[in-house]
Length: 210
Image 1 (spheres, rainbow, N blue to C red):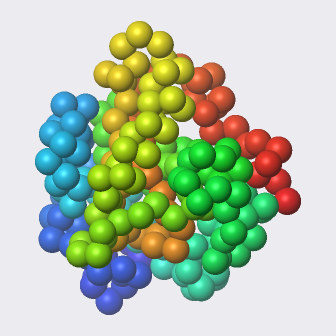
Image 2 (image 1 turned 120 degrees about the vertical axis):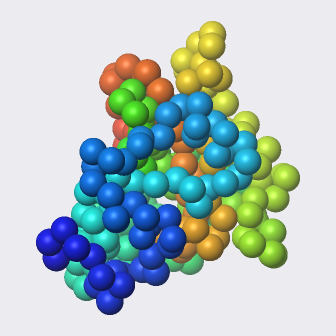
């Protein structure tokens, strides 16, 4: 594909933000800081999140190759990243309440994170149980937002001890922004977390195995 990416080569529609990023070099790109991320998430301005130019080019290439080989990104995730015990959609979760049963969610480091300053790790929590959204833009309902917030607090924040809430943020893309729509997922951003804690968060459980 080279360094140039044309609209015809992309496996998904490029946004104006994508086009702007692709016009830059990595050296020109301004990585998201923790403070900027907090502002974007609090304003629900999620479309402003950007990958580094080189990462975005690789992501476009990977997505095209993955769809050509597997038919969809979801098929790839089911084959290589998500629990074998889940089977294929439509799933049958152990609980109809998101994040209530450990077998219904899988915590993974994001393979394609946005462009962050050093020290920030991008985690994705995949849910076998659907997370309710509204009927307009597909954003979260107040009830589902509370469910996710409670889960993030007990799974991530509490593990970090005093001051942990300053090291964790989360968001869920509304439907129009999701690159994978078949399997619900939540993005969690953490900063300055020890590698052993990260590894414990993302370890595979016995209930994830077929």
